[in-house]
Image 1 (cartoon, rainbow, N blue to C red):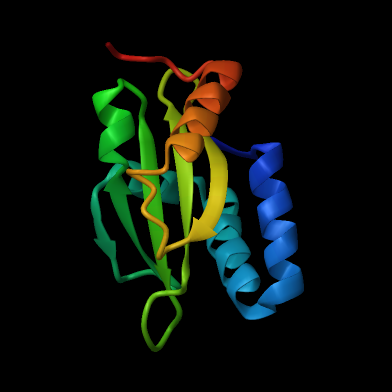
Image 2: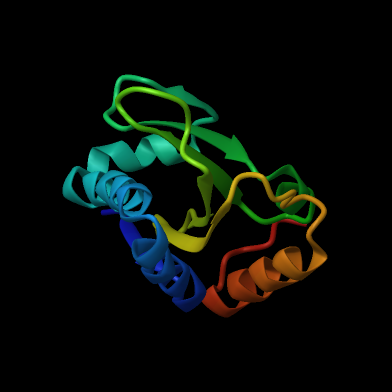
Length: 136
């Protein structure tokens, strides 16, 4: 059965978001809660596409830079029922052998995560600590 975990940095980022933007934090937690409540939805977290049949709707994309390094890391973009996507994205890793998903960071969408060396180093370190397999 799939599992969802939060890295400490991601928990802290989500807690800080609750203080600055409750609606956005609630939307992120609502979506992640839906995965925990309905494990069949976890399969959607490894399918690159926009999933509009869910409320809130979401889009999954591979974090290409991390995939090139051999790590199964994805980005999650979230839309409320109406309007444009929220200003934050969730980056998460998948451990296929354990069928476990790890929320690594909750970050502003306007940041260029592909070019952020500190973020990439942090994600690689988290993947290694968690034991996410590196396929290189």
